[in-house]
Image 1 (cartoon, helix red, strand yellow):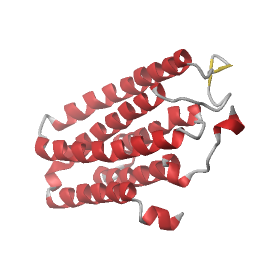
Image 2 (cartoon, rainbow, N blue to C red; image 1 turned 180 degrees about the vertical axis):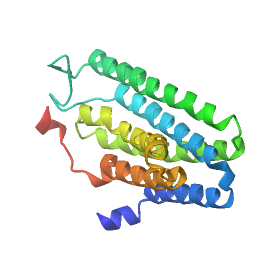
Image 3 (tube, one colour; image 1 turned 90 degrees about the vertical axis):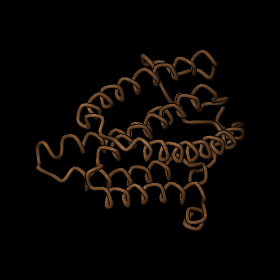
Image 4 (cartoon, rainbow, N blue to C red; image 1 turned 120 degrees about the horizontal axis):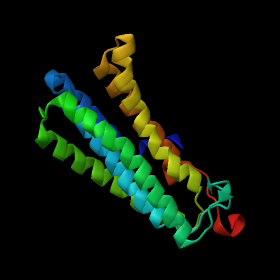
Length: 204
């Protein structure tokens, strides 16, 4: 596993983007809100790709997710409903955070850096999405896990907002460290390279 991680271009690219963000902040300490805005955009992109992933799943593990105490069926309509619910719930979270971030930044953001960063994150997520779809051809998907994993992105935001208010923590230090950790952890959990196969003929 370690060898595959170290030679995984998508993983190395993700680490490089985060290191670049840290480097940018060290050289532009007055632009912390730019980093925050970029992370919010990255989180929205993650939600978008996850939404498309939910819409295009072919096979799910029976009983891996329930709505109103009933398991989600392996039908286009059921999976579409799960995707739409995710888009609404995840989107509302990020709408609230987006309003908060904009209010805090007063629009003093390096938009060029944000656009470059979002382009890099989009490329990284696209590579992951293509690989994930290739993995799904021969494997059933845990729908519940796929639905809830993107919410890991919200945890650093909560701590970044609440930490400085209640504990007088340095928001920038907490934010950048937790962001990198969340990226790495989520990648290792979701990447097909690092999880066991679930053959369709054994799970459906």
